[in-house]
Length: 343
Image (cartoon, rainbow, N blue to C red; front, side, top):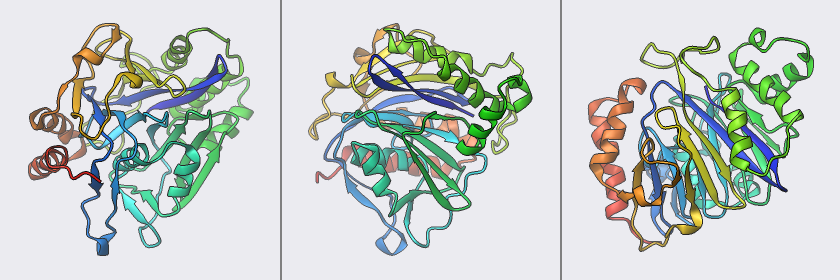
């Protein structure tokens, strides 16, 4: 599921994302400059190592270091969506990262979508466990759609209609052009959500509050258990419908994130300018469903392995993660945060 859109407000651009899934738990986490990371593989097996250049705040459901979206201090924002036709291809000509770790890699290393495009020449995401496509926005106002179709990389910089759901961008755009008089329900869930956002973007009314217009877009395609446009995830190990678990607005120019969740409708704010991302700082986390309206900074506490292991265990049944893998992933992240070498 998931729906994303980039829109204009008061001379700048924002990225709005609905994260739709079967489960709604999560941690918001900080990432610090100077930490040395890797994908855990040897050089012969496609090992990748890097030192974090930009601090970031990420939204995590499967584990810290495996975010589903986030924004760094340079203003680069990244959001994911399941891509029903997605195929990243084999790793014969380039090195690959886990599809979620790829998100963290972009936030750690790059400040613009142009840099992301260059990086894709050598390092790409894997199709497993599920194929994804990505929508990115930077503080310069440039956007980038990243898709993989039949193993080929397809990039679209500054598309006229920067919207993504779960169907390939070109397929949705063609449907939008041909469906002016069609009811959205006849187009299917993913294409229908794209067409709806496309129509809303065409008639967008300028407002002073970027969050208000962003959540207006998101609420209009929100997934609930009571509407008629809910689909089950075909690749999930649980038989269940999806909901809009989180709705997030990224404002790269102002370095601000505003979000709400299905369990907590209060609009909570994260101002990246208030955070200490220094290499000698402290990794911090907060429950995504906690807090009241306003600044969420006071709710953040020191990272602990127990909190991240609980996060992983909650998601494990859905993705089929075995018990030994839960402990291994939690331990790997813990070692990274507690014993990290500075670059």
